[in-house]
Structure formats: structure tokens, C-alpha cells
Length: 56
Image (cartoon, rainbow, N blue to C red; front, side, top):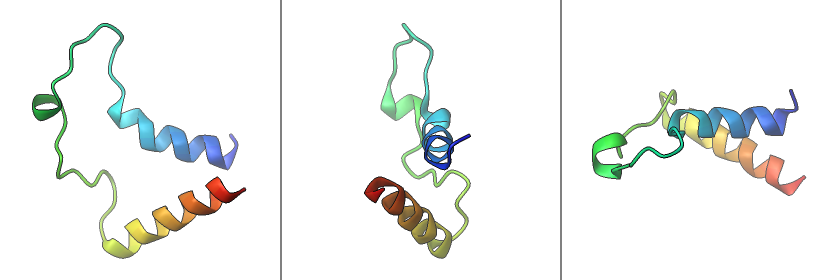
């Protein structure tokens, strides 16, 4: 799979909801969640990767 598609899929997949389902952000999503990121260094690398893909 194209690197850009894989990155987008990995970011969006945990946030997807089923069509027709009512959503309450307060109830359904943890605002403090960092996903699979364990450190600020890892997060910075992910942001840098995303930005470089957007520039392309």
C-alpha cells in the first residue's frame, strides 16, 4: 500500500464509527488518548512524516 494511504488509514481507523450511529465525543472518545505513541520524540517523528507526505 502507498505510504500516504497507510499513514492516513492508521490515523483514521481508530476514530471510525458505523454509519447511522449517534456519537457523543465526551462518551465515545478519550481526549487524552495518544494512540500508540509512547513519547514526544515519537510524536514529533510522526508529525514530521505526515508533513513531508503532505508536501509531496
